[in-house]
Amino acid sequence: MSVYPNITSTDPSTQNRKDFATDQDVRWCPGCGDYAILAAVQRTLPSLGIPKEQFTFISGIGCSSRFPYYMNTYGMHTIHGRAPALATGVKCQNPDLNVFVITGDGDSLSIGGNHFMHVLRRNVDLTIILFNNRIYGLTKGQYSPTSEQGKKTKSTPMGSLDHPFNPISVALGAEAGFVARAIDVDAKGLAAILARAARHKGTSLVEVFQNCNIFNDGAFHFISDRKERPKQALPLEHGKPMVFGEHKEKGIALSNSMQPMVVDVESHGIDNVLVHDETNPAMAYLLSRLTHPDFPTPTGVFRAVDRATYDDQLHAQIKEAISKKGRGKVQDLIEDSHVWDVN
Image (cartoon, rainbow, N blue to C red):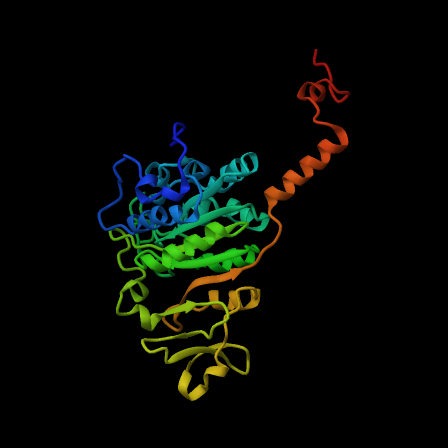
């Protein structure tokens, strides 16, 4: 567990990245994508105009889950897969806090799958950053729920038989209100998405393609490489046509059977290219199914809609109950009629 109880009050207008860094040595493997995500978060938080003492970071287990040690905010390093449950309690008890959940593909989608799914559907006002490197790095290279079929690892020497989870599809199926994807090496794009996610009211999920250079190096080379990214990434912008390529010469359209297809913009016509709509759940799910190598990989915000949050509704119920029945006393509950003596 990592807790920083003596954080001094700060003026949010003067905060910078250094204000969110601790004196702890950052202990990830040299070259790990986690460093880039940490830097992006520390650069983004000052731009939100919120004092650092109003942030807290809750993590589970895994390489990514060392994150709270490196943030000069309140935080907890909790237990495997249970970070959403702890974070829900923190947010409901402290509604003024800005709560971040830090997790990995193994932590969130394996042992933590149930907690991950339910925090999304409940729409607790949290920001979840899911580090996806398609491998178990902390335990030295076993396959994870997002590893591709046929993946040979220490735990699958003949190749994985499991069909992988698609985190974006899972989140959309759980009715998440804000779902996005970023890449660890795209500093500008990652920071922009993190800022939007943090400002969203409700559960926000940001999947970050993150390289594990020790146990799964190059898992996302097709999109992390600077030369390949323009060819393979499909940047999503609300209200704009879905085009990609070095010269934006390709686009995504629908066939007569409503199947997505890659088209040449010049010959097909820009008016026939799909226009992104963050409020359309069907479009978001369709985009989540576009996978390499048959399609470009969408990055950016898939879905962004507002709906009532769990924590706001909870406090409204509490307020209503108090107005009708008063605050009540715990001792009265203990001593009410529903008790019995054990001899």
